[in-house]
Length: 441
Ligand code: GDP
Ligand code: MG
Image 1 (cartoon, rainbow, N blue to C red):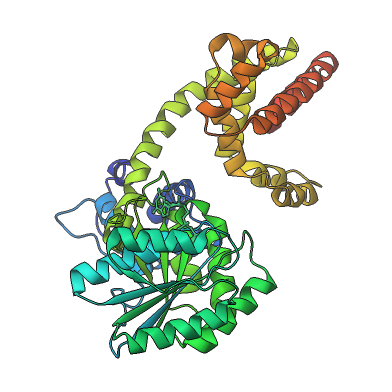
Image 2 (cartoon, rainbow, N blue to C red):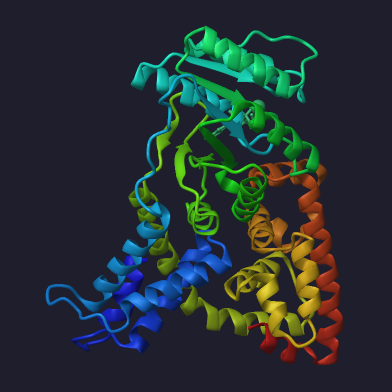
């Protein structure tokens, strides 16, 4: 991003204060980069507005270019939003035994994070830690925590079959007090989705445990959903902080920004892998850098794209008129859609399509789906792209695996391609094509 903004401003020879137009141009780039980093739309919008307010009219320091100055303003604002009122303070674990309640959806990483934090408190802070699993939902959940406990040398509450979560919480509290522990972790059960039963259970446990900290564990790869989950948990249970897991994956930090902006809750830790040491305190500077750095790649891709685009549009038009439409054509179209703000954005612009855009959104037909489809096409060979009918079942499996997806998704893509190809054929004959392409481009 910094390179990209630099470029915009290097073309401007103007000195003195940043004009509104200068800022406007740069901020369009910032907005795109944020969205590419998986920051949610309203958050990106607010962010851009905040930067605009700060940047417009600000005098340009002599020693830097206007571009560098805007980059700095953007960076500072990122850090500002990410860190909120100040640095995320350490876990509150005075007044032993201090209870830390771990909440979140199933599979978000609660149990793993509980053990990671317990190990950290034991090794870094010399604390005596007790962990208790309240997960009566999944058969092996309690054993999972016990095994981790043995592995890291941290005590776990003995398992008593048939107890309900609030009962276990009560027993854990007693045990922690009597056993002279400094910290008690309560690892709750999750569900696949937020539901009343889950919330009631977590509330009951909270009332019994009166935790010093309630940490929400969320999968950093889930992007938008993560924000909804956080809002929901905070409203119903009240959270004191967030742990973002799977930040070792190709998540680009956007979830962190959205999360912080929407919930206002500090991100305390990030999970960086499955190993017991793979956890770090949240560093706003680092994540800001990650979000900004991402843009450099975006800029390069963007530049390359511009030059290709004109030629490509021309070539595609010729092919469509002949009724040709293979996987490469589909890929080019998907990429075009992504660029224009995804399916919703595209349909939202066409008159009368607003409702469809909403339906598409509800059906999960979003940017991520476009990206997944592009990934699928990318893992096909040249021949297969030219003629997808060639695909045998074994190849389908390989392609889906190559894109990290399942075969059902590939089949959906193939079906969609077939339908589109048929439509193209019909339209190609009718001369409607030219107009349709003009609209798409
Ligand atoms: P829970 O259902 O919320 O208790 O989730 P678990 O703690 O059982 O974790 C589910 C899976 O996610 C396990 O396979 C963990 O090893 C994995 N996991 C947890 N945190 C991380 C992380 O930060 N990075 C990666 N790559 N995997 C993680
Ligand atoms: Mg668990």
